[in-house]
Image 1 (cartoon, rainbow, N blue to C red):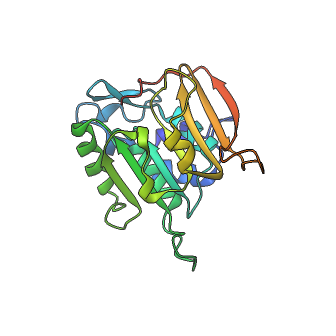
Image 2 (cartoon, helix red, strand yellow; image 1 turned 45 degrees about the vertical axis):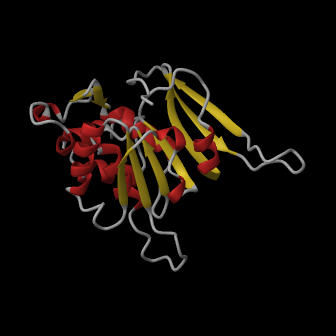
Amino acid sequence: METTESIKEPGKITNPAILEAFHDIRREDFLPSDVKPLASLNEALPIGYNQTISQPLTVGFMLELLEPKRGDRILDIGAGSGWTTALLSHIVGKAEYSTIPGKEGRVVGLEIIPELAEFGKKNVAKYGFIEKGIAKYLCQDANKGYPLEAPYDGILVSATLPKKELPRAWREQLKIGGKIVVPIQESIWVFTKKPARRGGGSEHKFTEKEYPGFVFVPFVS
């Protein structure tokens, strides 16, 4: 598959779990019928309602920054046509080998545009992730996160914020050591949650790292 081969170029994605997900989850299954022939291109493609599905190299790069692994719980914000939700679901799976309650892998996809959310949910369901309880796909405003499945090991955001200010709900619903990978203006940012200092209040601090040179559709709330 050309999409998989493109992210295996030198200096690109190297995480085996991410590469396997790109191989098994077909991008064309998350595109409108008239755009399906373009699925193998390393370009952002329209999915309707002024939204796009991001180019494979960008999605792979963001997943590599997020570092999802089997058994993780991930919040997927701006899930669109469901491609990132399906990729993440493939990676985190269900940790059936674990005897720790609540340690099953889980992905919650949030999309605010009703028609797109319906399309995305149907697409994710093609792979059985919703039926198996690995994925949940909801139509709602993502500013409040989704506390019912929190805390999360990681939060992936696929639409750009206008300024470097994360919603409180995202910060609170992230585990210590967890990451938020989010576009802000024309950069991808990684925020990693640190433990709160003793005597320093309940507010957690975050380390930050910026990767400039990316373009995303605006975050809708």
